[in-house]
Image (cartoon, rainbow, N blue to C red; front, side, top):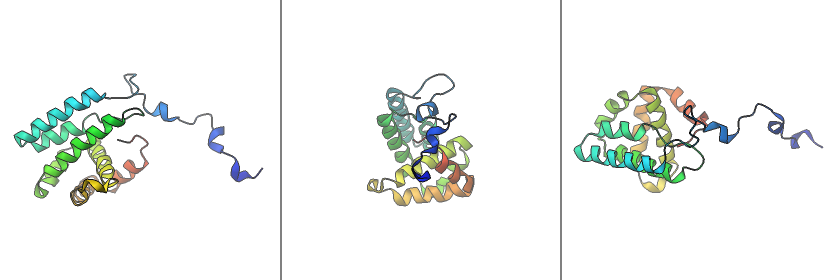
Length: 153
């Protein structure tokens, strides 16, 4: 048997499984449910209607759905975040980015990359503009942390 055919990760006793990644401190395995994401989407839409894009962005980025069985919730929250990003004027982006916490900036970068992975949404120019401004504020370390994070939105 060639050494290249041995899966050394299978021999590691301390390897973290995908299921163990999503057990949160409160014991909930999947994080926010679809119902809570839908109610958050309504709050985001209401804030956008009022013209309060900063609040809408903060609501959309708080408590993102992680987990293995939350695909519909992830899709719904991604739509909410992309709606907010596309409704902010380009001149207001730096102020919005600076008002976010570092955790919210990381989550925002995850959503920017998720949006870029789906170019059929037609928002690539908006996402690139947000990416530029977010990188200026959060630094290159934000990109590295997002790319290496195993928890995806």
